[in-house]
Image (cartoon, rainbow, N blue to C red; front, side, top):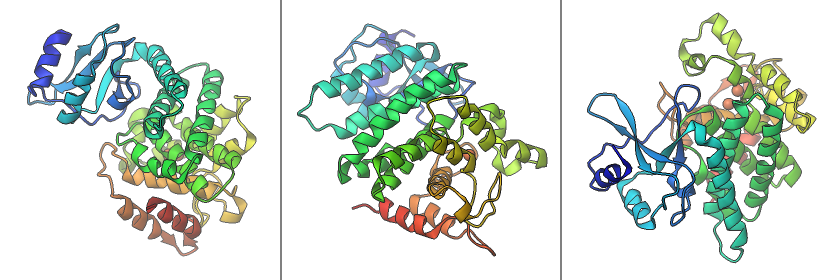
Length: 348
Ligand SMILES: [Fe+2]
Ligand SMILES: [Fe+2]
């Protein structure tokens, strides 16, 4: 099918567009991109596809919607919005082009100073960071790309620090898919949000943001099938999973630009308040003061995210479940941090 017939069928609502995508790592050669991050009325520098179910079976195909050098017509965007189509797909080999395109979009925002477009800009920034992270995690030159992603986190902290209205947007920016990148981004947004909400400094918020973004880097060294089947891990598999904080720590240690505090936080991100965590089983006062922040927002996103084989919990149900995790040595999640997080979630 060519782009014209795809558009025709799509606009006539004759295609069954698939909305949710799991895992964007490894297996597929197409990556999702949110419609809202594209510049309507502008030419594209890469091809766009829609993900449809070819028939009533489980078969999935990607149909070409727009070719590079074509203009994304604003009227199409409107129709797609009405149809509830919120994302396109691009080929993995176009990743560099997409990152450059999103970079241009960010520059465009910077040049239109007077207008208030915090939300749009944040969306583009987060998507840019999502793909930068994808590139970093899949590249042999980790250090260089990690450094690039770092400057984006600084921009994110700066934007979110502007006012309470921006901070509230965090809840709307969270990804509803599951992939390691989306999860890392969600944890990063929530971590920075909670730090700024608790009136922590820009520097401390940046440290937490970076640690959150890279906390599961070590999982890229764990077989993908293993990551998603948490209920069926046997003893040996569990031992493998448990190594990811140290693996991530070692990988990041090679990158000169990463501050030592970030390394410590990555190493400690599975330590619990009651000392039942791993790798070292540290008690709260032995941990870095921000470990409890990352531990909480990571667990929260784990419960509320759409993962394969798991129904997501609603925000308050997830908070309840975290609150109920208490061992004879006390609560697993620091109650003060949890209380603050609830206030952040309930931001009017
Ligand atoms: Fe982890
Ligand atoms: Fe995680």
